[in-house]
Image (cartoon, rainbow, N blue to C red; front, side, top):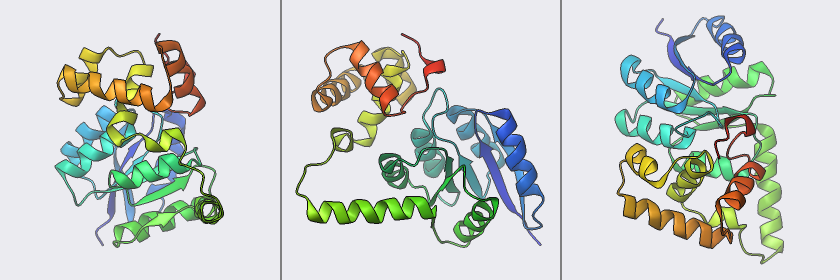
Length: 222
């Protein structure tokens, strides 16, 4: 029987080892490669051509969303399942926008992850029950209220990517190189995101990124 071939992308070695052991114990799936950041995930994905990528949120360097976009562009048939500690609706929405098929929280029972892998491999999708409940509650609240969307929700996917990389200490020129964009285009994204968020300097941008869990404090470069 052919196994579901899985690439595991997470920057915590012990967590990867635990998930790898869990997956390899199943008769119909195996971890064929590992990555510790988004850039490595893209490279390993091109090399081993997995059926599925389990993708962490919050890894250093290239964001999981940009990595997912590139993986799906290079090989559309590869499925991506976000495996994360963040029960954040903005992350869920962005993940779906870049082509992910599922979103599982790291504190979920192991059986949920195994079920999610199988469901997605068969062409379905999967959301952790807590995230699904949160979406339902949010939908109900939006029906009752005419409040405008939170400022973060008004950012485009590319603006969020630029926000993360700026907060990590990358220059506009470095971001342009990494994302294969012109410096002028990155400057435009920077201007737009700071206008939408009512942010006026680098310190405010970094503080906002920490509050929204877009970056991790240990990875900060100011």
